[in-house]
Image 1 (cartoon, rainbow, N blue to C red):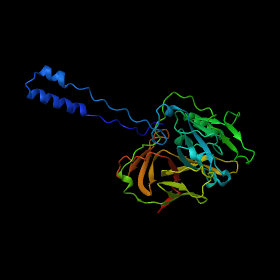
Image 2: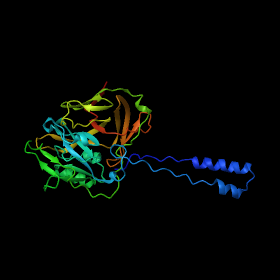
Image 3: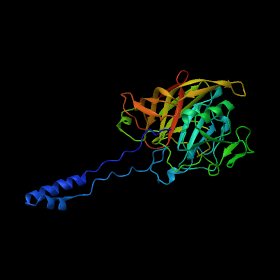
Length: 340
């Protein structure tokens, strides 16, 4: 996925000022042009290298660390998944609608690779627009054959349980299909080309947040049977009545709610429910929550493989504060976003 933004270096001008002063002093003392050049020359200004950051949080990083393996784990998000494991170590999480009005999580891991994540569930065609098709590997229990074909055609790398690859295990204390877990220190990811993944969002900050409307409670409704609720917790947001294990929940510095188109994927799940497909391409409205404030915005993505761009209602680029972000993909026709 193409990066949405990278830090830009600032050009220094101190050397130029020193040269002007030196030339002026030489002229006043009657020095020749050659002498002035010898005494006043300064080294050319050099733009500093951008400070290295993690691609899925925008937080400072050691540049050698950012070229390591990156994973997106598909995690069940129903009550049957409780307690979820590993969410507290995720960099970024995307919540998407699946069949039966429930949701599933695409949790990004790069900064830290926990040894237990799950319950691991199957992929959906919606993941084509969510997962960067670079060196990021989806960790999944599998998928319908038509979904696997589409993901492969889109260039999305994945590793599934079939064939008992390293890093997958089943818990005897849970029932199928909620008992599959992954050890990301053991899972074999896509071959690394030694490059840092592209930024998932444009990271930054700005005065726009201070002007936002108060938002200490947020409710994101996906369907009549599922609403994800958030409460301001210090300077971040915590999920209300989530499924994560105690002390292992994802604390969001920013919640980004995107109104998206949801279509019929064209097949039924084993229980006979139509499978929905989120289309994360095109444009739509968005609401960003940070620091107890809400900012209304728009989002755009030229194609499913393009980077996600956020704009203010005036059309200016809207950066997301560096930190841990949870993205809600809210059905535009049947879902809703409310806050106070």
